[in-house]
Length: 319
Image 1: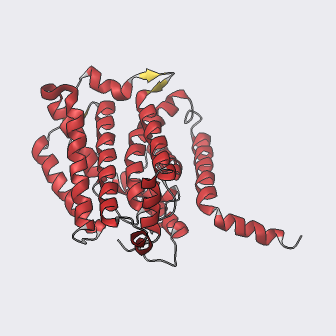
Image 2 (image 1 turned 90 degrees about the vertical axis):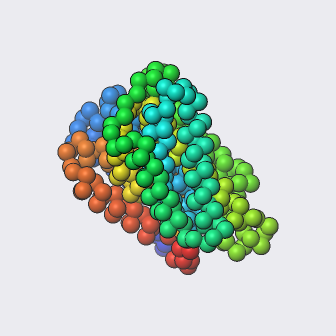
Image 3 (image 1 turned 180 degrees about the vertical axis):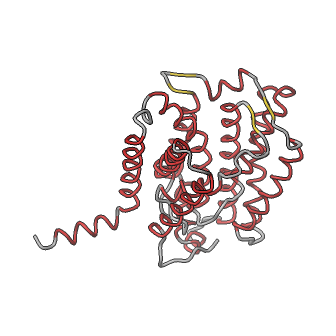
């Protein structure tokens, strides 16, 4: 009988990264439902789905990067560039603009990985520099103006309702499930965990660490681009300012789900909970007319708190 409290505490400590986000989601749901009874009504759920689906796609790509112990600050910029390429060139290229936008984003992902893997530039610096370059390209292409598009075939990617839910929901969940399979059931996923868990050990086990890091950043670029395509299909327009405040919520969603910044812990199967936490809190704060400054402060505190909770203190963040 005397061992039960100790066993309970030990179990809770080992499973905190799983239990914590679930409890947080339930608490967020209860609080905002009490404040606004329409929060989880049909229209409220549709609004939440729209806000979280494309966001989940980008977060899955970022999760793989963080699993390796690296960072990718270019995700919001690549999302923006992909969305702008679609709106600017849809009339000239039709739906062929989609593979063009994805290819461009994969190319920038390759550059990110190359800087890290071949030139030993820390990932936070490499991706920050690339993001600035991408922002410049986006400003040049858009000329700073709001861009609008109304191609019905393109917009149907996100706005077609199937079984009462918008198609962007199925894109988001499909990418999430594929990411889970990729992380947990393939050699690519095992190598990703190995690189994040023990860089030297992964190299000694015949993993080409440099090449794998490049692949991970290319995957992140691809999913960032796809998120941008879905964003533009959903919104039907945007300017160079879109995604300006997305970096902090994206990182917060990944660590809130339980993926450690030190790498090797967590994965996309946890990211959905983190995305729900962040997007639902954001929707609730918008409902309460809370300003963007307070929202960013809140997401920053969540990211810091979950980083402390999930970090492996026996290791250093090396990238």
